[in-house]
Image (cartoon, rainbow, N blue to C red; front, side, top):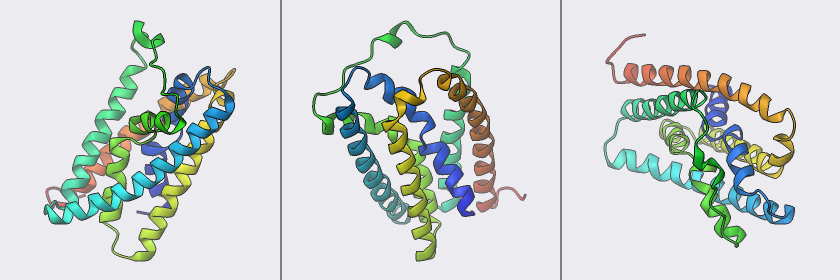
Length: 206
């Protein structure tokens, strides 16, 4: 995969678009200084967790004798299911419970930890990190993957810091349109990942 494709995968699976709405809702009414503390802690926790989890998962793949192709197919299936769910949710009426958002803990660290999964880090995002690190045979490529991952996490930090401003006015409409476009691209990318995994397993030929 090219660096551009790796960035696209991380942007869709771990990027800022999915964070804006949930983060703004759950930090509604909090002081700006507290929001900044929560955002910074969430960024640090998510970055460390994604890198550590990626290397741990890549190691366990080897120890458990899970083939690269099998992991690619598994990640692609989860990726596809999430994409389909997100696309279908756009046609569902708002749930009555949407306004009852649980309050975050008073401690910024505890609040950041509560937001970590699955708002900032997603299961399929971690799967993408694991697959990419497991398939990296050179230290230079591994460094590129980690660098792109950190870059996307920095975008997440900016999204959390400016979530309220971004969602003000017409921003929410733009995000809804962008979310629909990215949802379709995510579904297509998931199918492509599954096909690539099947090809690696020599079950199909592209």
